[in-house]
Image (cartoon, rainbow over all chains, first blue to last red; front, side):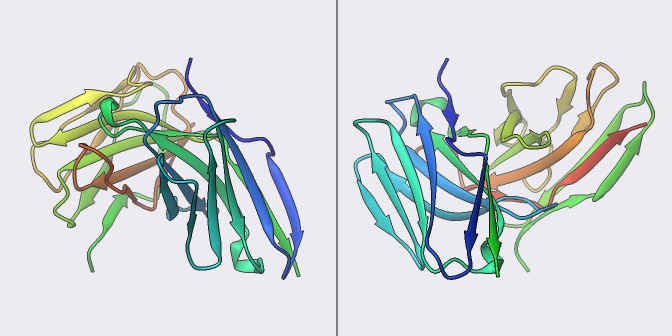
Length: 113
Length: 114
């Protein structure tokens, strides 16, 4: 069936380095992709999204890249800080499925000072 | 403050009991959602509601029930029919479900079955 998954379950980086979190998706009909950050014991927080007709979108210290050819999504965090430590989820939405989010498993990002 | 709230933060249930988790939003959102999250896993959709007095099953609705009598409220009941209810439950809301509308999440309720 259709699914969204992540390549790496854990990622450890040094403070100040750039982080790259990857996500593979299988539904070529998905219309939107979203990255969420979830800190321990809290609900997910929206980070950035990208429409399926875009390849790249930048936010503050974050960039999302979408490669539809290989069905790959990535989140780049520049100058990673200890406060970035969390679990990051990608999610997809297909418009004709009532706005339901399909979440991937998640990647835990650990930032070493 | 505008936002979405869930209560209680922690909930303990004995086997065979039904429990109800509260979700309230003052964002004037039409759509509300309930997700379940197991350790190390992503979120899975239990139920969602696009409008008052209407709701649809998500991917894992068995053993759960919901109601949507008011726009602001979308309580979730975990029934005794749910075989493995221990999990972190998250409620979300969005303006609507047509096209893409950002979902805003509550802080979650952690349910433990004793």
